Image 1 (cartoon, one colour):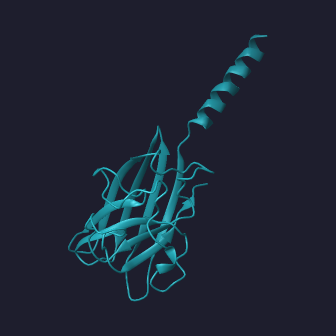
Image 2: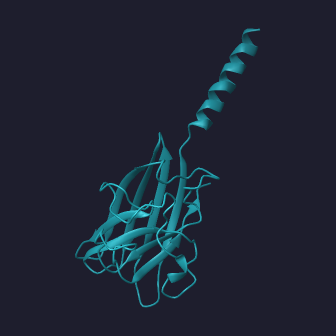
Image 3: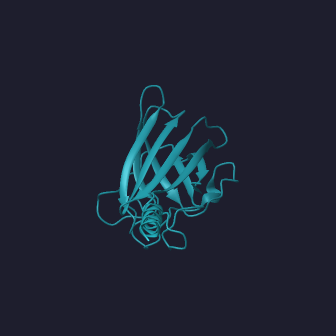
Length: 173
């Protein structure tokens, strides 16, 4: 009897651990035609937050727009096939932390003198998530690094210019 209770308890704990495991996804950014920009973006969802971390290289020093786009299609040489910003809640364009904005508005990244940039950002899963079947699920969407800064004002794009790199969000294993 004691052994059955212990086994049942261990199975319950194991199941609870699986239920609380972090969901993950990743993007491999590849350069568009004429660009050398590339990098990796990682997503980790846990405790009601989606953490976004990115490491990007091959940029001109300075500020660049960084957005999640509606389509996971990087087939066009200029990545226009990725469509517009991912906007599951039909908001105006803006910056993260600046009130209403698209789910795909991640703001700007700043490249150093060697052309490298990184980003660490957390957003609530009510905005975007890795939840399968949810309307705000980002798996299969396109990630874009732009040539110019996002001005957070121009609708619907932020006037961030040419697309330098594109990649598709792929669920972790």
